[in-house]
Length: 459
Ligand SMILES: [Zn+2]
Image (cartoon, rainbow, N blue to C red; front, side):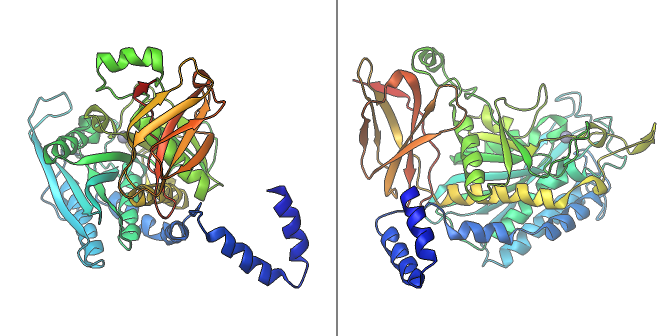
């Protein structure tokens, strides 16, 4: 590559520059799939901080969106909030030829289900589905939360603007729908406002069960919970840092699978972790100025979020959120105390930052929804041999496959090789013992599936 750079530099100073660039572009466009997709840059540009600000402002103005709050008032409480979210999704749908299927998915939770359900309540999620053109039953989901709370989790009347927790995630989800609804995708995308989060993750539980009942193949849940705060409680300020939480392996794995991990690896290579790496890599490719951190845990220490019920149901799911939390501004009664302003108020949200994390979601959704399905039955061989071998079943829509590998201590897929449209490959001189390996499918526009970690061996 350095040879080319030197030549290019020289040629740039000559009058033949234009002709060279034309020729250069021509040769490199033949037989090489695109490394980046121009449409992704258009998506990045289209996401609006102003619209996100407007939506967070509207959501915070419902006074409280507590799960147990008023459902009748047109201006206050969770009923008004969910009706407004549904109307927003419907407006978006009207502008894309009814491209969204918008509906409430709800479950009645009975008083005493846990100590935060002090009366019977309908937990109502607002769902908008953008149907895929090629794989309508394969879904990628982006979620925020409808509900909010104050210091006492069961106080459903006090003002709980929940501007950052989690109007930010909700507004980001609505904005992603606005932008992505202008495109068509091969897989389906679900934009959803989940309720009942603060009372015990009820909305996520309900929708995960609904997905199973419908036979949906959910390949990833991007749960956004607090994507608007840039100043940590410790004073650290960054509008580029964010975290991607993912659990190491699915809680649904069998004893056999767990036992196999001891011998074949995979302790840090479950489906949610691959999804986290996917978002990390997509961000680094298209937004290199951002600093995503892969956090190797389900969620913050001892705390929860709405991706978990999807993980419990066996689906890949991650949490995307700010890096620097401010605990005086979450789950707090609005008050002044010892000179500290407590409460999750609008003025603490950085809308430009919420926009950036919305973009992270939008481009990850688009890449995945434009990508072919991941290869199936990925098997690995090469025990007591000098070279590793991989084989897999081809998938419809892939133009080729990419082998990924990495040092066993590395969090990211650092090495890769495109192997074309084949169903097996041998990496000469690469010893199976010293790396972890995976395979991804590549589509016509260069979009890649998630990396699949082998779950079989062969000789
Ligand atoms: Zn919360």
